[in-house]
Image (cartoon, rainbow, N blue to C red; front, side, top):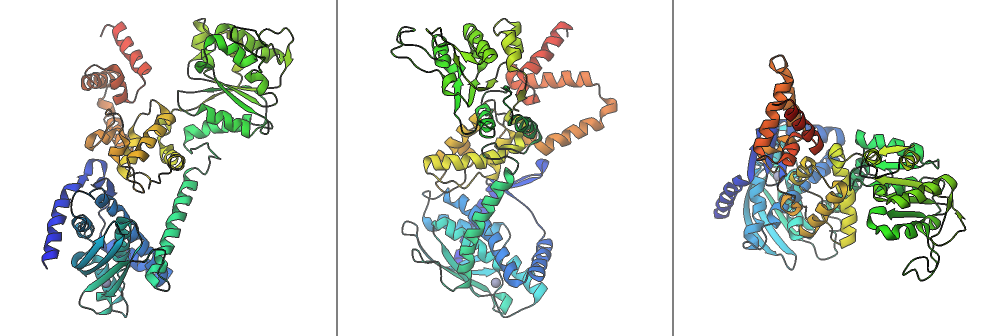
Length: 551
Ligand SMILES: [Zn+2]
């Protein structure tokens, strides 16, 4: 019994990892979101599963459900490997199973060698909720029935050992034994357990888990063909415009902040146009020195400028028959704008140093993160070129306006990053995902990819990326009430305000909120804007209005 007492002590230490956050309607165990359920309701669901699906199928489901819990708890334990004896760290599993109110666990024997992947253990279960639920619903029968609990043991130990471990329930209260007793051992390398039922299910679990993952990924991006990701209304609005322009040769102007994926949109447009078999040539006008951009775009004859050794075709000529994508077109210097306009009007380009115009057939897609109209007003961009580029503008929303697409992006990007670095990861912890959704993403998808890339590097191989591995800027809300900037809670607060409406003066309320945000950000206007969910420009506008009215 002394082992059991030790495990109880360990369970009491684990209490510190359990956190109730009623303000946001959440319960956390370390970084996993948990749920307090009534055993009565879960028992009713369990009974219904058995009656409607048959015992074998229901057993499989319950086993898999337990398996997933076990794998998630192993995550907590694996993070502590190296910080104590393997056996002690391992016993967190039984302790967590107890803390979660599932079953009381007594260790009969335990022999594990993490490096060799060897495991052998025997445990006694008492007071299991599933045991009680089964006996009270179906009475004592002729076989063991603690499937959910057994799945947990299999999942926890297999994930902890990094190797399939098989558990069997050799005694069970459900078949009249005085206690439930399970034994588990690691299978020899490569062996899947032959005709033993639990092991068949174990390999089925793997296949199912794989399938669930694939389906989830597909669901998450079902309306986003190929590499365009998203199903948020903001994204779909842009996507529908894009779709309608695909068949034609109309010049498209993509508008949006840095990092929103303008090149991906441009590539998609090309891939879905009649020109898809011809070249797609992308040029970042902001990345080419001003004195070289004309020769880059239009080509140059030998000796046309200092350093031009031989004649070379420009990007326009290379895109002949296909699509030319000019990113950051607002950075195009004035003389190049003149030449570009001429090329668009006549379908001809002039190589530097040549007086023979060359015919080209190019579909142009341009993109910018600056306000071209403002650039026109400021004399930095030609009005005639602007109107030539602007017949079909498509606004690509920033990531913060499509937070619901973030999980799909995470799946998409993680798959890509894992392949790139040969490091598989098991997604994100719930907490980490919540943090991503609450963040503002000034650098948009590019920033998300960078953050995830770092996360993949810092996460345990095969483990999930947690909050620490994300390493987001400190302005991000991390816990408790600061998380109220997200989702439902924000909505609820808004509801409360709206209910107070008859007593509320909107102007005064806004002024008070502005003051409070400035106070909390120590007068940092950018930070205050973030707190209020405004852009820097919006808050500047309000402050200016206030200064003018002399408040
Ligand atoms: Zn049992």
